[in-house]
Length: 472
Picture 1 (cartoon, rainbow, N blue to C red):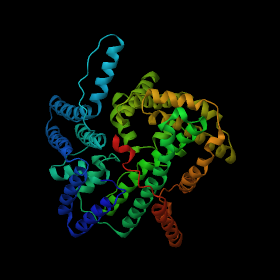
Picture 2: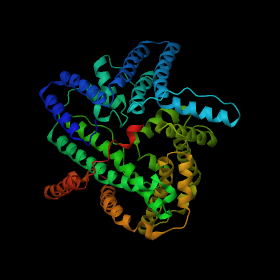
Picture 3: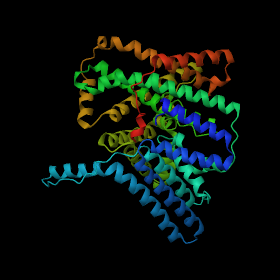
Picture 4: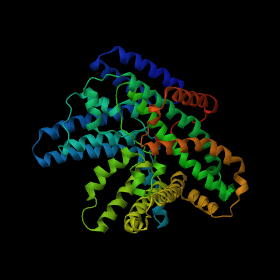
């Protein structure tokens, strides 16, 4: 059930009417049923997987909390890790590793046919697996009291607005909102409607229209010119941002209508000035999860510098693999790790190069934003490539003769789709307020909302289909 469909609009209207008519406990039960209906609309057969993870982690958390035996607590934590990561590995990574092993075997003269599952990937499995794992890890660390109400915990795992593409919520943030009565008000209703409207615009107008350009270039890179590959890569950078952050905006907006507040998942990432800053702005719920549960567990920045670099590399490699079972995702993760390591090495030099004076600092900031955006786009080319051969063709085409005239029909479309959003983000950055529009005068807001609404009606693409991150 896609956010950008009439089906979801009807579903949400029914949920909202029932929600407002019920009291707290009944609201939670209704939301749990609605969440399972929402997820079951994709494929009801996978409901058993999310229910299994819920049951295991509910009882594991209670047993860990009740036990003072460290060995027993570790065994229960291991049960949670093995069951959750085992399910994720079986459905998402089994065929990838089996095929890779078979290919390696053929290279060394050992031929065998791999056993492949060839089953569909359950939508959102990476998101809800990390969400429920954070709960058991926090309970194991004694940083969180487990909930004894099974149905409330089940709602935490399956809460439908953010179930299939995040943000990956922590139990310490979302569970208290589930356990306590919620009182939606006009302020949360108004800001929620804005997030839904703006998120839908990002998806169906910006992302889905840019997808036409991106698919044309990446569908046949050998026929594309260098200029087309470059502009197609810039288009993909904005497509994936608007697609993913658009989903998050709608998820946060829908949650506000129900009285919930989800975490901010994007903080103007293309205004980042370095790789570390980028990951503090892009997919924040994943980057903080990897930091808190993987990077710090590996040792973080404690110890010798080489250990810090090792921890960064391993964290980003696994972060890349989290996104998909493919060597391009592994390379993308390695690339992101390399950027973080190089930035750490160059940081003292960059600090000495920074000019003084207001104008010098502004120009320095613009230069760093420009360079970081180019580095991010190199990563997006790796990310978007179907396989290593496809990536090779893209790189070959990128470094061929540059034909500026070949993108003449596309430049205006790109500027019309991206330009207004980029300008609005500069305003948000200058005001240091991503919801600054809510503070604008009512007539100005009404004009903006009207333009966005008609933009969705007139320019919205109905071909777009699922959000990109549903495949992860």
